[in-house]
Length: 406
Ligand code: SF4
Ligand code: SF4
Ligand code: FES
Image (cartoon, rainbow, N blue to C red; front, top):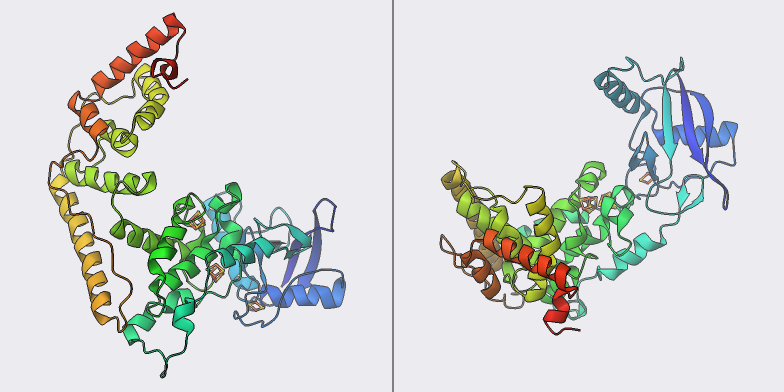
């Protein structure tokens, strides 16, 4: 069968262009085999990376038909089948011909990394970000004891999934957080970070968790778009590993530690209380632990009031009891698996900081200002704030002047 390969090519300091190559191929041919043939038979100037040809080294990652994948893993038949499926779903075309009589496969360099030439990208930041999570078992643990380190099979099993990462860059290439936040270290680095957290030989867990939760460069920078899980050729599921680090952080720290932690804890508490989120309380409890936090809510609160989007009441969900028992069952399961792991660990990790006790229902508001704002039922707080804004308008003095902050 004949297939047109549309390859996005780029020379240093010039705009990208698409070049077409037509090949006689079998459905079982891998994309890498096709690229090799193009290079050997038609155009020796085409640049791409490859090494093992067997899904081991991670060198041949590139965008095939719009998503990052290993060229030595994907084959012509499966790519055309996927295209046909998409075309049929879009009910535009019944075959993947792109208006041409021959089927087409597009090949482009990975995203989120600058192109060096054609399909070769500069992965320096990818490696630097990996280095930033200190992907090595801690120094102390590397001081070799008299005997080898012992690990129980269950402890070793926890490293299996992340240990499969071949650092191909496919997840990083598709990561939405990386595209908009240059500080975010990326899914590959955080998957490796979890491997370190889960390793029973490492004795730096507390320090690592502290590091991985800084700002938006660590786990809180992930937007949970699921792309990394979708494209990873080794089923490392980086987003799941990021979730496990978050669980570990949430387990060890209480709601006063940071806004990110408070955000998750408040969300779970509110859903447990009412079956879904009481939006009147959500913002107040997340940022309401300080005057500055409450004031930062003002513009949003006023806009919500103006547009009639501030919910006047809260109606608990009819399924509140079921929702609560589901959440509690999951929490119980998580804490029992954590206890089991601790019991099985041959050399115990550093002591775990005290866990915040489960709230009673209805829980006591966690913060002074939140309690105050909830006491006067949110709505009145907002009305008061509108009044203050009106005064501000007529007196030409702002809040900060009244508060003596300037
Ligand atoms: S996590 Fe998966 S996609 Fe990301 S670098 Fe590792 S193997 Fe590649
Ligand atoms: S789930 Fe998070 S880490 Fe994975 S691609 Fe999306 S933003 Fe990036
Ligand atoms: S060439 Fe090694 S993974 Fe494709």
